[in-house]
Image 1: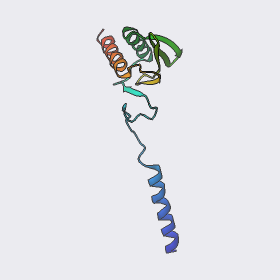
Image 2: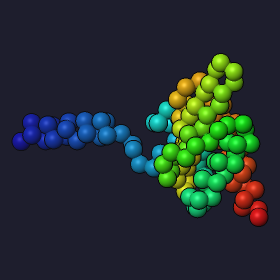
Image 3: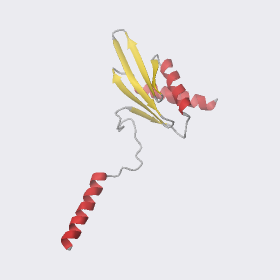
Image 4: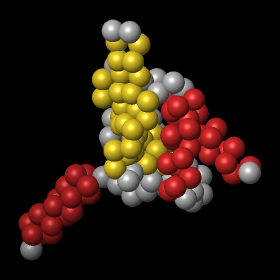
Length: 123
């Protein structure tokens, strides 16, 4: 009986170690599972407002913005012989920028998106 208890206890501890603490993690740009740069939006913003802010911010930063899906936009930048592109995915509470090729300067784009959302809120 003692051997059975030890086996059950060892199994339970093993499961806890393998599972880890996975509840409610907040991802930052550095530890994003997606490998992209993330912006977590405060409160619940309408998806249309997030979409519009992404489009305006990208265009103001000199990027060509192309709608890809209902929740994704392709950002492209061409400078002579070099080019860069990124996929911007979004929900009503998060924006993620994944650099595909080159350097799209995702941090600046996220900052511009955040500014656009704040200016829309003030109207």
